[in-house]
Length: 425
Image 1 (cartoon, rainbow, N blue to C red):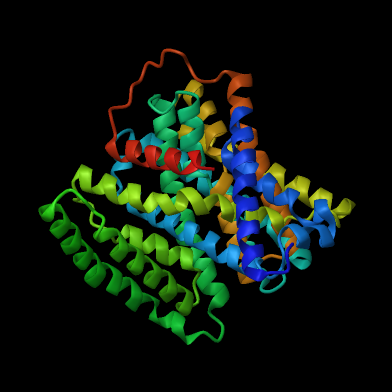
Image 2 (cartoon, rainbow, N blue to C red):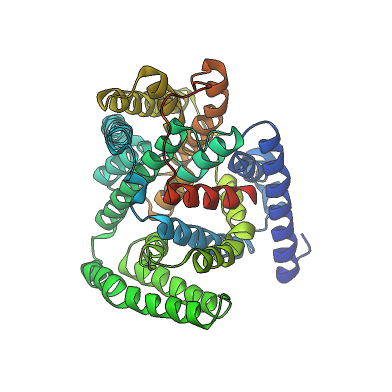
């Protein structure tokens, strides 16, 4: 660009955010989530499309770490909000069906992914084969809760019993996936890292010390008035400290952000809670799309040969069949009729931004190599993009459902959060 590092940074930031906004809007116009367009924006700026020299001109090497740092702040804020929304009340209605869909959509792809990873580990695992196998299983089991909420909202299905049920099942499944991924990250980083032994101490501090402090701060804010402007800077400081603590422990910062959000008090009044979320969402509105643009720049399919393409086909096939099959089987075993089990299976196959986050973390931690990262990103985009068209092709949702799900405040709040976050992309 200009040769001036500061000028290059601002120009690259403007270019990345502008491209994310434009392509995200185009993706939504054709019925796809914004994250699909944001990933494509990154791919268009990658060496695969522009050559190495062209990519360095658009996004100079000197500014990429700075863009990555800003993107991580947006991701940390997003993970805080996801943690803040987890309160368990989404299991209040149709518990058997929700747990059936969630269990089938996690257990079956987890096992299938691990089975697929065993022969692939020799080629695509740069480090521990065991960690690679465990990671692939976890990655296959993910459903993108936020993207699913957006798809349901766009099609007017948020209040449909099947839509609400799959949203709750996705919340349960993603919670399990994050816990499992934390275990894989801990296993992969355990060698030579004595700090990991302090993880139980960190969790105790979060929920025995930090949680009561946060409850006191929130209560004082509620008494002093409806504004949360003085509270939010303190929350951001706490969020950054929690992220730094988990990074030092040898676990990725996203788990610190999630834990800090989960430590937030749940008895907050609606007005105070909504104000906290609105203020915290502002950073994610701007910076989270940047994360997916940066993730897209790392995708490189130029070196793929026949063997790699066969592996990619296997990854996509196992991901789709195991996820949809597991969700359908779990739904049927839980007593759901075929007319509800089939759309639930289609919806649970959505992976989107959650999958992108997980595979990017795995690449940073050295659990997978560059080729396998590219495969998993392609799989995430394909499984996300196919959800909307499949719902239209099969017309599997009944127009006049016979079963109505009572209002669930937790699911409604989570859906609103996810839609607001994704709309900015």
